[in-house]
Length: 381
Image (cartoon, rainbow, N blue to C red; front, top):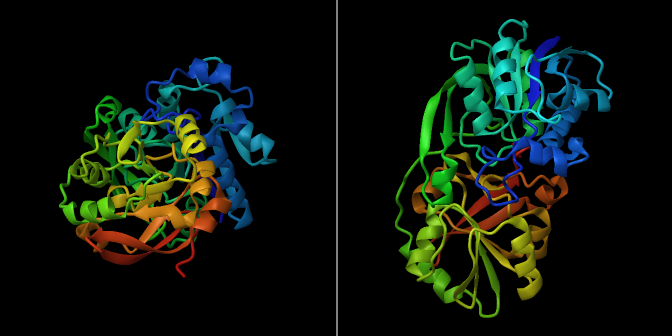
């Protein structure tokens, strides 16, 4: 069965992650245009490439309505797709790069193009722009996660998962539900506060296990036992990279360490040696102090361990640490609701290397066995 897709890419989505910016809302597209000569290598476009490759691999017959240039047609043409119509937007690009105005224009157009699904590659900001520009949208949407902030409930767990969701939808198996669109204020994140705003809802194609949950806001936890155990177990002359999240921030507070809530910080011999680090800063610390240990916690209700909100922990850094040096901490409440944790580092080989069973620390000398798998993996084995 032929499925007609309104398809677009937000090329700026995800750019802020490795830079530790908490989002990409304030990034000037002209700067991206000047500093990225090979625009098809941008993170969001690489995720779109993975989606399209999987769509072809599982033989989904699709016709695309897509904006010209960087938002869609450039990638489709480079991959040899021919079944698409190039949509010329009225608003000219900024040095060849799109802005939120282009997202809004295409979202409004999608209702008149006769497509079955609106597929977009981006983050929460992109989802908010779609909702704000067309609040009466009846066409179901499917988000492919590429942004720094991906808290909304409209996203597949990964690019490959999205392709399988569309296949099931074309076969009449997947259903459509109203799912929340939320956004986190980037300035609040930089100040260490999570200000989640529910913007509205969008009709979303859903398949259990292939669509991520939405983030819960502002939950307090008792993590004293976890902190006490880590305080005893942390090695001297070892670099510790502390991932984002309230749980880890509270652990740090109990240990007498000043930590940003939504940044990646570094500790060496019980002293903070780096706060709110970007990818390059982390690499310099690893070069100085050697093989690190990484302390991470799943992000809210999404179940993501790596690849959401902590893109500063780049594949090279995770490999340097190694699977054995990843320390997972979870509260008892979260551990009771999450059986499988997800990774989507942007490096599929690394995602597969990280797959397996881990001991998550849930209290003082208390552990729970949890499974970690790539978010894009569609099997339930």
